[in-house]
Length: 56
Image (tube, rainbow, N blue to C red; front, top):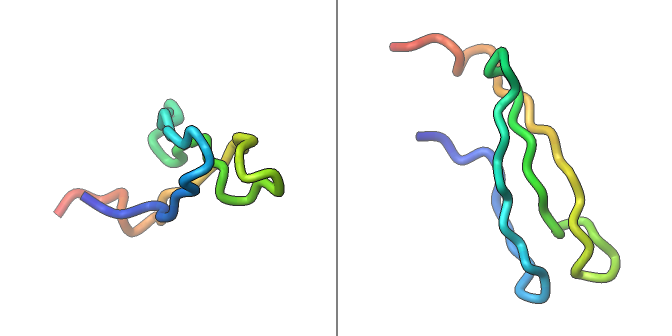
């Protein structure tokens, strides 16, 4: 298990609903971390580092 993002605004209905790309290299989440009104959800795409892709 790896932490990909952190943070939460208490004023937002933050709930990320992660979606993984078909190739497993990116994850999309929704977050209010960068919203100026502290409520609006933004869409973020997190690229998974290449080194994390191999199973050890």
